[in-house]
Image (cartoon, rainbow, N blue to C red):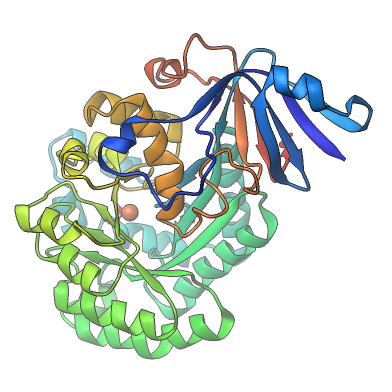
Length: 415
Ligand code: NIG
Ligand code: FE
């Protein structure tokens, strides 16, 4: 049976012809239809248009009708960078930072990623799955319909596989579309202190073959940063990943620009993420590539570090995506509504740029642009219906307010 959502005051981010991504000046445009309907069949969008058109063509008897009651419809957020599978929280470190310690100082004292790795070691796969599913369900209610989730808090064979198994179970159970990324090179584990290469060998020789055998990841990631992994390590892991079909999505330029953008692009990475610290050469390496620069403003907000120069990417004709970076250390929120408001306020992006960056462009950043990221015939019916709002810009302006009324994934309203 068909479903029709009627009385939509504004249907946002409609798409007639498929696009790869939206870049440069085009990021300032979104297509929309006022007083609209969307029709859904077998979990996919089968038609959309203005209410006048629908009144003419509809088969009223054989249709499940949902009244948007004057709310707006947006395509679901695609959150292309998260570390959603973690155990416990790190508010003690948060307080240490308030008192004046830096993120790096906390990491040097055994906090940070290593602290989360200890907590992963203490939890069973089943328990980790339960808490992660609950976390994901909360994000779905906040409008996220597709999500990339990284490992990286395991830092040993058993614990990295534990996280990847949990992501795989989320993929199979959640109505949200889930993509999985192996981030074995997130930090140097305690037991490998001073022996970084031995750990990289373990990751490449022992963990990657298991991932390949059990088909446990779509992408490969590395934290390319001073004190973590350098460009040589990044090159090595991206090449090893590529051999088993994993495409790169890397953590680069968070604190220092050390060549991570260039080496990621040389290895045909799908996205480079963070980019708070950009040199001229980093911008130049991005021009003319298929790599999506992905910005994570809630990490800057939470850590009090500089924001990525979002406007500069757009002014150079590049696209940008926005993601939450949801993790216990640098962004303990996966709320994409907040990411959008923050991007307007701190990155000085317009509502249109933010909508493009959190839908079509972030879908591209996880290889999902053909099935998600806009209201287009044939794409998955992953969308949310808002409460009535004066304009679509109100969603970003009225920060902190939950304006989402109903969420639909695969054509079904989420209870
Ligand atoms: O993307 N920068 C590296 N990884 C995470 C944070 C990790 C943590 O502090 O737990 C990030 O910000
Ligand atoms: Fe991250």
